[in-house]
Amino acid sequence: MKLYSFFRSSASYRVRIALNLKGLSYEQIPIHLRRGGGEQFAPAYKQINPQGLVPALEDGGRVLIQSLAIMEYLDECYPTPPFLPSDPADKALVRSMALIVACEIHPIQNLRVLVHLKNNLNQSDDDLNRWAQHWIDLGLSALEAMLVSAPKQKKFCFGDAPTLADICLVPQLAIARRFNCDLSRFPAIMAVEANCVALTAFAHAAPEKQPDAE
Ligand SMILES: N[C@@H](CCC(=O)N[C@@H](CS)C(=O)NCC(=O)O)C(=O)O
Image (cartoon, rainbow, N blue to C red; front, side):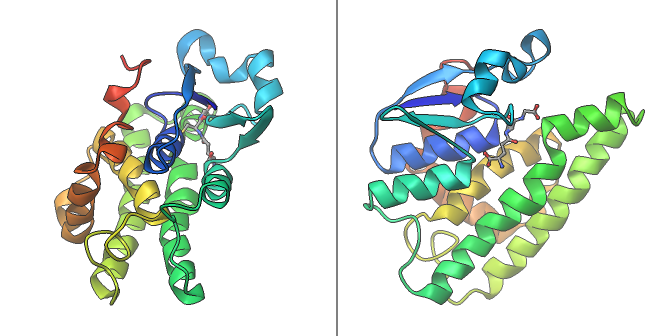
């Protein structure tokens, strides 16, 4: 498998964790999101991902995009260990946690959104930081409340094994730190993160461990 990714990209980080949890080997093709105005916009890469975003996963000659779609594909092709619980309501709960990160937090503090705010709407770097902090804080506050009240929350967001929720959460925390968010307000999230990063699948997927890390 080939993973088109960028070491600092949290959506790529999700897929690296997922591949590692499934015990799959993969070659990383780095797509630098800043160099030369962004390698994601190169015509050759847009043939791979017309959205001009990372990650993209090539498997058996087919290319998949969108990290959640990729992770569900991996889960269906390689069911062990599962990324979702079997009970429909539990599954919906785990998906809802993953979607808080992937749909409500990450897209509005993504690079292209910040570049647009800065270059076209004349916002300062301070404004961009406050923007990112605001949306990250709002989403993590909701997730913290869910973890505190969830009856099946144990070592991880749900139960005693990592699910899609943890796979989305840990990379988002790396971004939160990049924007200097105050994570001490989220003790349940911090406890889950500590249990995740103790696993080699998460530790080996960390941005600083990637071949393209700067
Ligand atoms: N929903 C997409 C998001 C992909 C995405 O936004 N990737 C970011 C890096 S985390 C990116 O490529 N940004 C490039 C840009 O904003 O120009 C997914 O989950 O794969």
